[in-house]
Image (cartoon, rainbow, N blue to C red; front, side, top):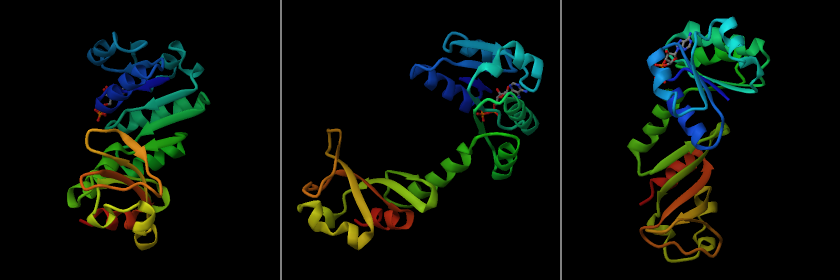
Length: 212
Ligand code: ADP
């Protein structure tokens, strides 16, 4: 895997990949950043990744996965992504700072665009206004929520709470204080203080999480 740009996003990504056993070639134009990561990643090199020769010398065309984690320098982000696409690297992930930037990255060949700040902003908006402990929204308006158990759901088997027919959500896992998550079944009986994970349409999941 090649990670280009060792700022906050690319740096954390490179370290996490190495931690999970992936070999990482980490590139950045700034020597002090490359130096900082040199001992933690498989290979690190100083390179201007808008320079096709520099990429060739580092054998970048041989990789089948790359992440372009250049943010603010749009020109460098777009040029780098298009060079990786010219090399026909099959999986090119690119970080965008705006939807517009993301659309351009897709057009020049990114196979997947991520908008970390935008997505995190949306997610935090959900968390700060309600009782949710965590929230993940997928495409087509489907979401998973981590929340405290509402009073209507305690002391009887989940199958009898009619949560699914009343709220349109499914409780998929529960967590007792001090224990790990376990999969929920029809017979699971929730107790006050349990944490649960529920899945459903974004709007339904939010309404369910707002119950006390
Ligand atoms: P973050 O918000 O994740 O910190 P930044 O946009 O600040 O992201 O960091 C992106 C990194 O990409 C910087 O360390 C910068 O040096 C690097 N970068 C920018 N342009 C190039 C380029 N042409 N070649 C290589 N690295 C680059």
